[in-house]
Image (cartoon, rainbow, N blue to C red; front, side, top):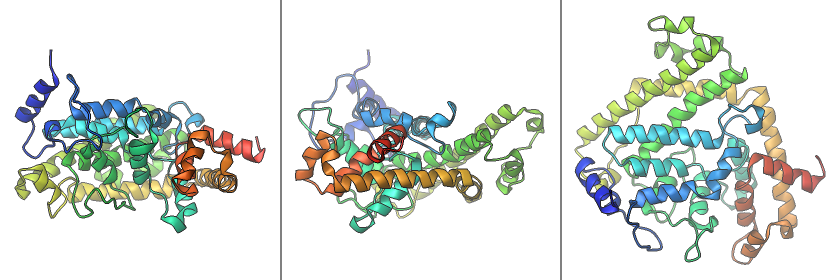
Length: 379
């Protein structure tokens, strides 16, 4: 029978010196007694999985609205795929697999309904008061909005998981007083950033092809297709449409994940780092693609933006998201008494726009549509 102490000792023996060890965690905001059979990062993972915010991801849009087709990715299945890739990368580099998994499972808990369209609308509505950022919102979820415990607010996660959430790479990074702006997070957190990109590049192409919004011709004539040598061996030509989609996903993930492992290992060796603290103070990023594969990844993102995300059908959904989120926000701003009781009670301590954003960002797509119908009378 393995105890927590046994697992902590195993980490000391099996992980590289620059990996984050659960026994050396900076701890939790509210001290709690350690669990006899789970490390601190394993405990974080379990708290995240059992949270309401995690369950709601099942009905939040990734790219396609969940009810459009049963097999499209949702924010939840995307999260699971990111966690799987993160575990593989961390394990292969002898980093802390449990920490990487916990950060991956939590990284999208702050996403509002309707995917990035919903986030863009909230950011626009809150522009004059600092905007909206799903990383910052994710921290609010795990620090305050989950109310499972009587002795402290939030999930009371470890510093390292919260740091990974706060420092998750986006186009608009957040500045948090608890996490130094110029420092890198743990290597495990940086791996999650890259795993996130690998996952959405691969599965957005898969879902785009399945939806018919992307054509095989547009994919097979793209520069990144040729760069990845998709036709190597000739076997892909004989596959049917569904098998070809799966082949593309496998090829993309395999090439990119393998490249990240090799390049990250090279960067670590050349840097000479020996501790987690040296990782945080590194002058250069230590996780990422090689220049050639990084170029391919950038080409795929450009391809998806022009061919899928800006497709007329997707733009129509974005317009609908703008309508629904704006209507709810404006109605609740005028009539905050319509908020559920637990949010109304917080109005005495926090500004109305913060409380309304908390409520709105926690909604699933279908619940937001339902609230919109109720307040507008448009069924």
